[in-house]
Length: 365
Image (cartoon, rainbow, N blue to C red; front, side, top):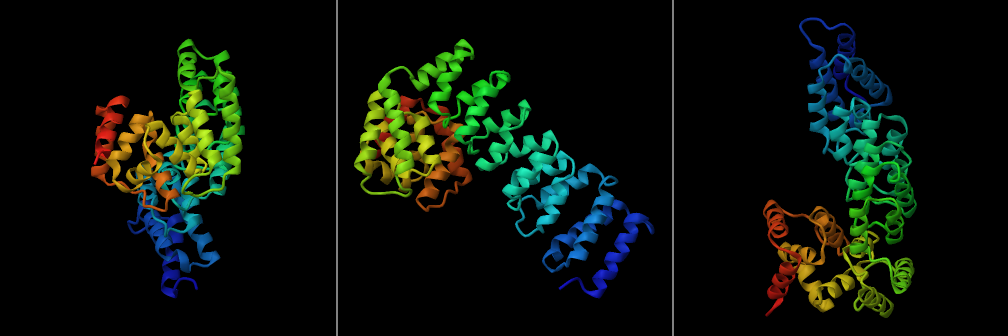
């Protein structure tokens, strides 16, 4: 059902005013009136009414002050009840207007993002690269861009999921775009073999970082990583108690070979392998699996933060670890302001070794 007769009369008047403002009505007032009506009446509009509203907004956009359009976009950015096509209209505006919607709107779909990557400005692409939680279809499209700021925004987005193919392309592009090298190497889910390949062209400082954090040399490491890839593909999703023998053997081999590190934890967690994540984390901390699960999932954020600090997980990806691990256990990932401050304090004040000591002291009966 469309608008009432009274509303349609108003719409006709707004359309005329958009073309020829009079009686003191400003284009800004008309723009906001139409946008507000569109937002409120969205579900009841027919196609002709939608087309009319979009046309009015398009006509007015170039004459309405940027600050007003930005304020409207910010007001709608986290509103899930807004008509989808109103969001699309606004994200096609200048990047200053589009950015809050690209970053926060739950209505912006994967297909919308891919379309913008193909058609919109580089600034729009850069904003999409920083959007939280973007998946592989979107990151694959971004990787195809040969624009360094877009690629840099992508590799700095800790929540972005990047495919092995995407990482290979990024590694090759880092030969020409040197600014990509360090953030790429420091991503916790960076494939080990690709980091090793980068040693042939990165700076000496980055070579040392790779050698210290990836430990490529021994053949048994290659064997362990190969088995890890096999296990990641073969193990079913979801927690099991106790974990399969193959998982326990894999973790032990990785520990012995020196490859049981924060990067492996992030890798298995991002792929939903919660058994491997729990088993690897417990082994890395030197605690029993049941003890780990009890404190990590039940005892609040302090011990989780201490565990992550002790395992060498960077503070910038703590929220990702906290959210993904809880989602895998069907628990709420929300942290309040007080909990966030406590996490910040732990990462600021504890070294890795001190965090491990504090964690084990907190686990003592």
